[in-house]
Length: 292
Ligand code: ADP
Ligand code: MG
Image (cartoon, rainbow, N blue to C red; front, side):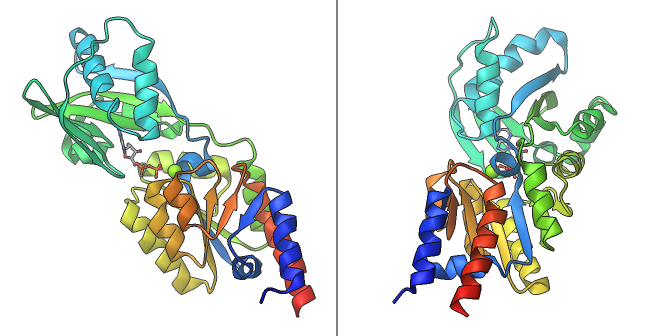
């Protein structure tokens, strides 16, 4: 049976935009010593915008844009949506027939157009050497601005790159600061590259970050945290985050997140409201005092 104090705290949470899937999760919140956060859609708005386009040769711009647009149309990733929004605004972008489309979570996509196989995704996904030899220094400068760089290439090498900027949520910095003041260790997990991850983590004011983190590696990071800390939380919004949410002692989903994240989580922030985490921890503390 559920105690009146617990019931009352759960309903207080619900009135304030935090949904608890049971009293035990509410109870555990005040014991969290570390919280891992997904980057895109959790610490950031999750709506990146294309800021730069660089191609191998000027002649290829329209062709590259058409390929990017046609392939990314088939992907649900926020980056794909941003690229499609961008190409929709430009002239001379053709809709090409796409075959054998494959989404590789945490890396990118591959697809065939007119018998040519294209890869679109993070630099490492297209081959390390090719990525590094392309436009020396430019890549780093973009990443230092917190931009995510996506490459497009065929078997001949890199054909171009798109840089996208996703903004850190207005409330993220304060939310993280309050948690850190209360002694919670905060770490950002992202599939993005090292330099971009560092820039965003700094902007958000995190204690630490892990870059180049594939979906299954997010689970490993949460497991590592659980070895160092007794109670670990994980906050995320994507399908990719669901296994890590399930691995944490308390999984927290952003309310606008994907169904899988919402189903897997123990706690849901109904309005994507990160400051509610610290508030919910306080609620948990008060409730635990009444119960004990
Ligand atoms: P995050 O952890 O920041 O939410 P993901 O793990 O979803 O990011 O993806 C990691 C990286 O893989 C992205 O930064 C991007 O470079 C690349 N990527 C993933 N999906 C796509 C896609 N559909 N198109 C282009 N790049 C992609
Ligand atoms: Mg995300």
